[in-house]
Image (tube, rainbow, N blue to C red):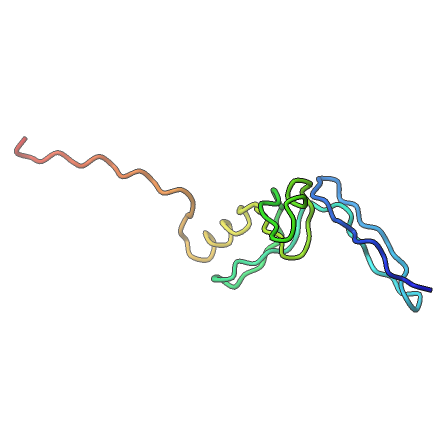
Length: 111
């Protein structure tokens, strides 16, 4: 009668695996076991895009979760910036990315 379950411990993987779990009342929840993408927001620009997760960088609760690339709440992850760059270029008309090197100073006419 107890429906407490083990944590899903969702891993970062290219093959997406989502399982169906029967819960109280015969309802269904979906348990993600392996994922490679998610919805991420750019807070200062107030936009959200679906993007790929590249890696788990930091987890305050446990270093083991970083080593095993486990996706949990409050984990710091590195995501692919391409969808955000495309939106920024389309919205503002400015390319963002690495800073361009300054052109060499033009020679003066007197020299």
